[in-house]
Length: 234
Length: 124
Image (cartoon, rainbow over all chains, first blue to last red; front, side):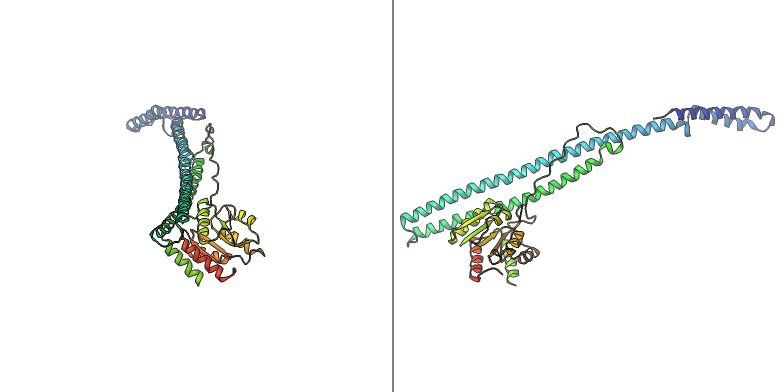
């Protein structure tokens, strides 16, 4: 920053005031009541010389402003770092955890269906041994067991629906990450002509597009099917 | 009759396939999305059961593509999906879907819709 011009101005101002002082000395033959006025003027000049004001204080003011601005920029840099850590670390971590849930439920659902298939196979074997469809309580129980097992398999539809719900949540997180990265870019010191921050975190790669229904739900299936039937029947 | 079951969820495909087998239909082919379904579709396919939300090519676009083909104009198309708002249902009808099941569904509903379509003959 250039302080020399402000300092020279201070010197010039001081020199001018000294000239005024000497001019006041020179009018001493006017014999006016100058004692009070002169003492006030001398006091004022003394204040100006001892405590710089106006243009004379410009260097100090500019130095203070510069220090304040640099402090604010440093805070902005810290905020940018925090935003980037929040966007890239926490949101990506949360996204990853949600995808792990999807994967885990798919594996579990597959295992359950495998178990149900094996159980149905055993019921079929019992039918073969005992005579399928034959009268009697045993045959009825086998058929009931078969129905129950098949019902269990149908219940696993929740896995597809919750996967869509999780994919929706992941898409919301991805949007948050994108917006946080945009905000962090606003805080980039390069925006203010300051040296760029070294080692800026990498921008997260785009998440793969997953197909999902944002409104997917397991609730109220009968009512929703009734609406469909009304429209198709219309 | 050969069924073509289309869904990007392996769990859902298995549930639909098991339901079809329970009804008595055992000639079944599967596809993971609409694009794969178009590759697997041929004149031997007599019924299509498809999801809506799928990568690459969704169920609605699959229906439109099939209706644009001479060998796909008459095949019954049953949509099985979580989407259930009025606008979606109307869009499905517009695309050429013949019937519609909301997830989660029961085997009884699936059998009812298949019986209706097979009893009614071909697509609109």
